[in-house]
Length: 490
Image (cartoon, rainbow, N blue to C red; front, top):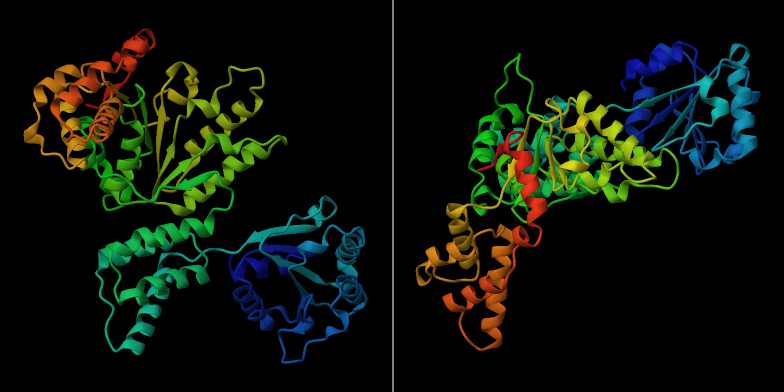
C-alpha cells in the first residue's frame, strides 16, 4: 500500500477503508501528508486520547474517547472529514458500533466522511463489507532496506568513530534476510547486527533469520531449523549434490536466464532411515538460506476452512522468509485421502498444488516421503517438482563413509577398525541403523568398563535385524517402483 493508493480510495468516495499494519506512526504520517491534496480536516481517534487533529496543531479532545460517543460525534458533524479510528477492532462486536459505522457510511453523499479503520488486524463485519475496501501497508523494498541499514551504519560510525566492516555480498545477504519485515523490525534487526561488533558478517545471518522467523511465526505450523547440516556431514548423495550445485546460483539469484524458471523443489522418496531428512537440512546449509519445516499434523482444525487457512498462513510466512528451503516432512501423512474423512486432506492438497503452481517467491520445496502409494498422481506428475530422487539403502562405499563419520563422532581412530569387515556385516543396513549400532556398542562398552572396539561393534551389527529384512516385501516393492521412475541419489 502506498500514499497514492490511499489517496485514490479516498477520492473514489469509498466510505470505509480498512488498513492492516503494525506501523501505525508511519501510516498516520503518510495520511497527514495528504492534507493539501484532500483539503479536508484529518482526525485520529484512539481510546486513550479521544480525537486529535493531524492536519493542524490542536490539543486532543478526550470528551469523545468512548467508542459510542466518538461515532455519534462523527455522525453529527456536518463538515466532511477524514477520521482515522486507531485500534477499533475490539469494539466491532458491539451491534451499536456496527450500526453507527453503517449509518455514517450510508450517509456519505450527505456527510462526506471517510472512515479509516487502522489496526494490526481487522475483520470487517459482513454488514459493512460492500461499503468498505481493505488495504495492507506495503513492506519496504530492497532499496529502502539498504537505506535503513546504511542509516544504522552511520549511527554506529558517529557513536564509535569507526566504519562498519562489511562487503557488498554480505550486505546483500542482510537485505535478503530483512525482506518481508516492517520498517521498524528491519531497523531493529539491522541495528542489532551492526551494534553487536561493528560489522555485518556471515555469522550475523543465522541470528537475523532466527529473529525474523520468531517475529513472523505465531501459528506453530512452521518450525525454524536452527542447525542445518553441511553436505560434508552426509555420506553419499553424489547425484543430488551435483544437481543442487548446478542450480544454486539460479535459486539465489546470482545467475538468471530469462527463459529458465528458478528451481522449484525436489521430492525425496526412499527407505526409512537412509538420510532423507538429513538431505533436506543439507540443502539449506549448502545454499546458506533458512530452513523451515512444515508440520502437517498441526494444520488440521475441526472448523471448516480453518485447515486450509492454516496452510495458507504457513506458506505466506515461508514466502516472507524467502529465499528459503521449505521442508515438507513425510508429506504423504498430510495429504492421504484414503480414509473416510478425506475432505480436509483433499482441500490441503488443492491449496498446496495451487500455491506450487502460482508462487513467485524463491521458496525451494524439499518434500520427503516413505510411501509412494499414498501420494496422489497430481502431486508426483512431472512439473510439480523439478525432480524425484530415490534414496536407497547405502552401497558399500557409502557405508564405509558412514562408519567413518560416526566413529569419529565417538572420538574413535578409524585406523583402529577393520572397515571392510564392518561394511560386509552391515549389508542391507540403513544409515540410521549403522549409527544406532555404533551408539549401542558404545553403551555396551561403557557398561562393561571397556573401550569401544571392533568386536563390540561387530556384535551389535550381528544382533541387529535391519528394516530391509524385517519389512523386505515392502522395501522390495518400493525399490522396484522407483527403478524406472526416479533418479538415484547416489
